[in-house]
Amino acid sequence: MDARWVDLRSDTVTHPTPAMRRAMAEAEVGDDVYGEDPTVNRLQEAAAKAVGKEAALFFPSGTMANQAAVKVHTQPGQEVICEASCHIYNVEMAMMAAFSGVLARPVPGLRGQLDPGDVEAAVRPRSYYLAQTGLVAVENTANLAGGTVCPPGHAAAIGEAARRFGLPTHLDGARIFNAAVALGVSAADLAAPFDSVMFCVSKGLCAPAGSLLCGSADFVERARRVRKMMGGGMRQAGVLAAAGLVALEAMTGRLAEDHRRAKALARRLAETDLFDVDLPSVETNIVVTSVRPPLAAPRVGEVLKERGILCHVLNERSIRFVTHHDLDDEGLARALEALGGPF
Image (cartoon, rainbow, N blue to C red; front, side):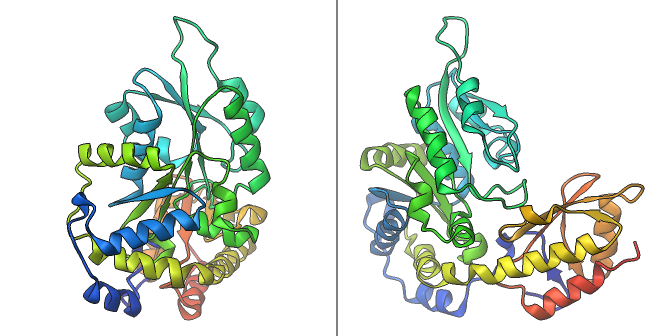
């Protein structure tokens, strides 16, 4: 990271580690569109094992993988039940409508998580004049809700509710390993109730790019065709997959450090009279805070930038801070000092 800045905009700003760069330089490669890249194949095998699924497919991004899952699971004219603040609905460019011909049916949840009873209530009755429900999608961790987690029991209840109606389920697990660390369970435990799951090896795991879409062998084979439709077929992608293997092997165990720093950041915000932050909701590496009037969030963002701190201004009232591998305790101290004001 540039020493001038403490970058808290996102964990997507992380840089590949030295071990990743070595692995990338030495990666054995082939043509992945033909299924012949051995490093990609090893990553896909490791990814499927990590989340307890039969197979996995390497994608350039989490958004593409999420939207491929929507395409495989649904038919045009259907609806996708999802939590109102979720990424797949709010920050993926209405792709489910543009590409799959389906609509989101957003349901307000508690701290970014759906209530199983609300899922059942949102399923459309069988009728010739109503769009039918095609999929239930869950996010863990819930990004815009502040990185909150969905425990295994809660996820299982959502999965059971969907199965009662014969509906498939998809988990946007971009940061599933953050959730697993926070809960003290395995990623496979969190993915078990869902027919498919996506997770990123970038973000907090520091790989330069890439996400894995996991599910049954049949689901993944269908997703492979959709990936090609979306222009997501990569050739000698083992150069990227090599970093993903290091991410799975070496980076998941250190995520608790990011969570510790996020909690310290949240406590500092709560100590001031300028911000509102729900401390119990800071469970992983994301802190979403409201700015108290008459102060506006864009003004806070400008002042923090002048002090060398970068954050993500969500709207006039809210700001997001994200801790990650490239933020050490010295950088955290700089951020805590800058947040003391005045603004």
